Amino acid sequence: MLKQCLLRPQTVAFVMNQTPIRSSCHLARLGSTRRSLWRTFSSTNNNDDVNNDNKPRLSVAVVGAGPAGFYASKYLTSSVLKRITQSTSSGDDDDDTHSTPFGFSGIDIDLIERLPTPYGLVRYGVAPDHPEVKNVENDFAALFNKQGESQNSSINFYGNVDVGKQIPLSKLQSLYDVVILAYGCQAADKRLNIPGEDTLEGVLSAREFVAWYNGHPEFQHIGPIVERCLWKKKSNTTNDDDITETSISPARVVVIGQGNVALDVARVLAKGKPGLIDTDTPTSVLNVLKGGVSHVSVVGRRGHVQGAFTIKELRELTKLDKEGHNVSFVVRKEELEMGMTDASMEELKGPGGRPKSRIDKLLQDNAVEEDAQSTDAEKSVEIRFLLNPTQLAPHESNLSKVGHVLCERTRLEGDPGKQRPVGTGEMEELPADLVLVSIGYRGMPLEGMEELDFFDSSSSTVVNEHGKLPGENNLFVTGWIKRGPTGIIGTNIMDAKDTVKSVMNYLETSVPVAGVESQGRDGLNDHLGAHDVKVVDWNQFLRIVSAEIDTTRLRSEAQPREKILAVSEMLNAAQR
Ligand code: NAP
Image (cartoon, rainbow, N blue to C red; front, side, top):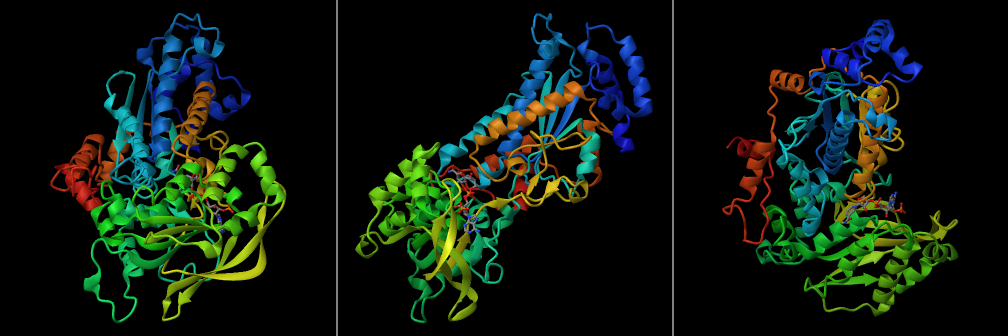
């Protein structure tokens, strides 16, 4: 705490030039030394004609280079630059705050990422057959491409740096004026808490499966597991030689959960190599998926009105056959009817009911009676409702592998918007060679963060108010680790703006509490150098990109890139 209360030279300059501290608690925070310093500066600082050259630049560390980290960097840079312009303009601004001096002459952001590559879930989470979503990478890269347009701002990328392991969070706090946590929820999963979840081969989380098919370097061990589940010999008479690169796997896959991630994995499994050949799906993944999987069931414990998926993703499933992917879409009329309680009808009519009504119509249009299901397609994706998994059971001939998912039929009870699944006692067994649990991601504290008491393990998020962590510190948070794993990429824009507003408020009303070590980027470089960390900077990342789009690596002209799958290989490419 003592460390946090001392002033560094830049902070002194900031105090000299900044708006008088407004509340007594800020003065109390300064301690006696800082209070006497503050008295001296405030009594001599009556001059609003501030020379920007004497002011420090704001140093900011952003932990995590996914969408949340990029948007926070973008909007904090623009807010600080705007504020600097306002504070140096002639003062015709009606807003009192903005006609007062601002304590900083510029902003330097260091975007720190555990992997050698930026973009987080855009690179390793968005489905490869959604390239239009991945285009947002260009907007993020623009932050670096515009580098140098304003002398008052800079952004550096520190890839391959693990905050918590290679540099403690407390060290970052002492080096930087502001630290923004934007490291997401990609480290863990929500759990079903049912038998078989942890013990059987062939039970994976959708998070692991998605990371594998997107070429995430830490999930390449998933490939052999998927391969065993999809292509294990059905009987002694099946010969491996009969399996070609377009063979359709006879396996049955059960996906538990009905969010957009569940629909993504079902679509990818069904499409297989023929449907993904022109995407950036790694070739090693296509070689496992081959012609796709014959039967995928996506199972939800509630009804179709309560499904967490959106219509775009649902429609894609219904159109797979028309688009030539040889996949029929199956939904049972009976299950749609069962979910149409009075409360569900109210949900369709009530606020926010319009998207749900469109989903209802799409499903009703595609629904068939259970005994009338027939199709020429060799593969199918079936969406099942009102089935709650109660056990993942072993295969009868191999007790270490999953064989089926035992589900209990549910009925809905409760008021509109709050309907919950209640067991009816009726059981159904869904055969399964592979089970993908897709019930949501879970945030984890960074190493060393537990002691700070900032992590709420019940919601798996960092405790915050509009992105500001409680108490006297320079910590902020944005993205999934702030609000939980919900929303699309664009949701992070409003979220980042909310956090940036809190940062700006902090800068206006508090003395930044960075400690004696506050050397920002120089201090980070010294620390990482002393610990022999192989940092990947932005230009080195661009070399990784060049290697990935080298035509000698690509399977066709249409393939956007062949991702490098090992960190060691990325580091080699970064050095070339
Ligand atoms: P999600 O949208 O939160 O869906 C989770 C699903 O799991 C729900 O159907 C939920 O059902 C079910 N579930 C939760 N706990 C369960 C349990 N114990 N037993 C059975 N089912 C359970 O999560 P997500 O699919 O991982 O997606 C995360 C976020 O990323 C979402 O906001 C999503 O929209 C977004 N995303 C968007 C796209 C896209 O735009 N294309 C793609 C991928 C992800 P209940 O409702 O009954 O709890």
